[in-house]
Every structure is written in C-alpha cells, then in structure tokens.
Image (cartoon, rainbow, N blue to C red; front, side, top):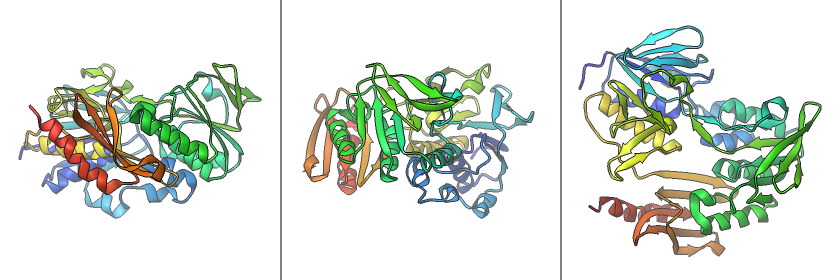
Length: 391
C-alpha cells in the first residue's frame, strides 16, 4: 500500500462515492474529502427518469447512503460548492465559494452536462433531466400539464416518454434517429422499441430535427420541426445528449478531449485520476480510448482507481453493461453494441416480448442484449468475454 496521506474527490456522484468507499474498505485511513456541486448527498441517477419522475419514490429514496453510513466514511463532504478550477501539478482545487483545497491525490468525478437548445432558458416549461433537482422540477411541471414533447429518442428521452405516458400525459417523442434508441441498440431492437412506444400511445416524430421552440408570454407552447410541422406542448424536455463536465478544468494542465484523457490505470496526471462519465481512458483489451456513460461503469471504474491509488497497478478493462426499463420491458446490454454489428436473435422472439440477441462483427460476438431475459443475457455474456480474450 502506498503512503497516500490525503485524497480529494471532486464530484459527490456515484463514482465519487464508490472511490471513497473502496479506499476505506482497502484500509486507507488518511484524510478524505468529497466536493460536490449540488446540495444533495450522493444519489442514484437511473431512478430520476423513472421512479422519482413518476412520484413513486420520494427524493430521499434515491440517496445512495444514509447519513449514518456517510458518517462512517470519516470523510469531509463539501456540498453545494462546485469546483471552478484545478492546478493538476499542485493538486489544488478552487471552488465557487473561494475555497482552496489541496491533497496528495485528486480524483475527478464531475460527470456530464446536458446539451441545451438555443433559447430554452428564456422559456418556462422547458426542462433537461440530469440532476435530482431537474427531476423534481420536471415532475412538478408534468403534474400540472397535459401535453409533453420529448426531444431526443435516446435512452433518456425514451425513459422520460415512457414514464410520462404512464402518468397519463399526451406524449410526443421527436428525434433525429429513424427508430427509438437505434443509435445505441441497432435497427432490430430500435424498431421493436419504436413499436412498443407506439402501442402505448406515444406519438412518434422520428427522423426529423427539432428546429426551434415556440412560446408566448415567456412560456413554451410547442416545438417546430425541420419538416415544418409544429408540435403543441405545455411542457418540453430536451434530451439530446450530454457532454463531459470539463469546462472547470480549463488551464488545469490536463489533456481534455472527449472527456479527461487518462491512461489504462485511469490516471490523467501524476496523482490525478478520473472516473465515470467524464473519464476517457485507454482500454488495453480494445487497444483504443473509451468513454462510457452509465452507472455500472462509474462504480466499476472507481474500484480500479482506488486500487491504483493504493499501489496495486491495475488496468481498467471492463466489459460494458447498461440497462433501461421502459413500461414492462427490461433491457440489459453487455459488451459493445456497435452500429456495424450483425444482430441475431438466439433465444425467444421479439413478438413474444422476450428475447436474447447477439451482436457480431466479423463473425465474433461483441455484444449481447436481453429483452426481458436478464439471466439468459448474463449467460451469453461469456461469448463477449471470449471475443475480447482473443489475441
């Protein structure tokens, strides 16, 4: 074990918390501090577009740990004070309140920032969904309106549309893709998801760009599409993707590309590491740089970062995994579901609402997807393991 005497985690996220907990489990007893931009303690993001938005969970149920559990970490939590700058060489972090925090080791875990449309901040009733406060604000809005337009047919937009439909709203889902989540899951699964949303009553406007928001008296009234069609709305959610939250790292001395560029140990500079959605690292199994945006990756990456801080020298070589729940459908995806992959259903059938599909490139399985077949998908994950193990 190394002699790290102080560790500062910037980002009170699932990944940031996981680093802190892993360090303590592995015997680290030095100073530990966690800086968070939000006033909330670390919370889980996947429930925001589902249980929290639907109102079946109170906000506190999304908290990852109780107050007593956090206290057991013997860490200083500095919440509601976002980081505004980093000197990587000095391992010195500045915050919005004027604090200057220094540590022997710094971990960056500030996640993502939602993309926004021009003019959306000038109109009431237009939302993004990234934070717990975003989810609560959107829920308040949805309980007072009838018509919702969701812009963006990716995983977040699809989950919000499904939740809002379940709340009884008149929902329209618009996006550039030809099918729901086709960019993430390919044409076969995308078409199946598109059919699912249509059967549940969601109006679909796919394959066309949202050109502008319309409004009156400072409030949103609809969305104008590039086709010329106008979609009336009492509320709009903009779910057109996110970017790594790295603006605060300008002038830090770190390499910033598609996120914070790290080596295979998730190290961005001597004694500076990055985890989660903002970390772009060298995946030794693939021989290329990778950045993943999901909860599982953040927690798994945190374990490796904690190990490397304490001298274990371990590369991070995961098989990616993510899930999404929409209506009565649970989708689990293992590995790499690339656009060029050939997709074959190997168990079940889409028309039976349960199946497993292989994603193959050059005859080798690179990804596995389970649609209401979680256990079978985990079994078939071994095919991905074998592909990555090939020389």
